Image (tube, one colour):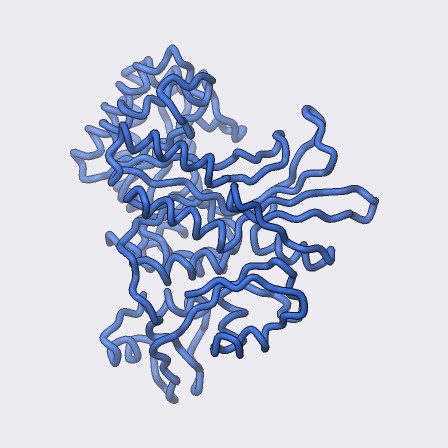
Length: 427
């Protein structure tokens, strides 16, 4: 595997000849929509097939997999487009394996809403250990606020991705409710009714675990929050279900603020089966322009987390999106707009600008001037920033990563993970 950064005058054919790979492979591995409009500074993932099979008339994926003592899932991972292909055609080139040794086995969790584009989902599922579906809320009476999750659960199981239910204090209006969370933590009868309903729903739908996502918890509810986690984890573990808890990105136990104070890393880490460090949203909708997950800031969170939580319990959060800010930034006025990482590159091409790279944040960005003459800046993720994050995960020996979220395509990310790691499958 190599990463090629596009230089002035580069084109797909010349890059393919340089690395002795097919142009089509570069295009598909990087999700390039228009191969004639590469952007100076654009990062391209270059993968080197080891064994390639030419499809014969009438062959099926099952037959091809058996011929090479491989699994059909491995073929999907090495050729993601196959998950959407209605059939094989004679002469088609299928990658059986790639050159190079994989580093180790990792857990990959992806978060999705029920309305995810099915084509996007199908291309991602082969690379997931778990698919966490956002998400169930609860009423003040303890009933669950339903979502249309059954189609995603069925697809997840087809690709051996464990479906994970998510519980939060999201109300019917789609916002986190500090008050509703507090009610749950401090009312044991309500709490047990919610847990009863969760267990029943997990059996009914075929979920294998629960993701607990309570944000903006009052500091005064810190002890009650831990007691709730002990209750729900104990009861779900007894039924054979796992519990993951999402944690705000802290760098010390003393960190203040509504997001942080009730998220006691040591205590939550001792209770939960796994945790997700929400190491993103440094650059966010209402904040100043910067990388969404600058690796130097993410490192500080991980360095603290491993001192109080077993490293084998930790998933590090990775964002699958970027933001556009109009310049100059004005606090209280400027509102950034999110965009997908693949679209960001396309957007740079459309605006005839160069992609730059911040070495400290390990993140790409670019400037452009819109049709109204306004100056804008875009920060996003590419294979270089993803590589830096996975190097951090490997350095600290973490369990793996959790992607918020998988609603947008990001081909080079998934192909990078597949090239570097064995993806844990638990079903």
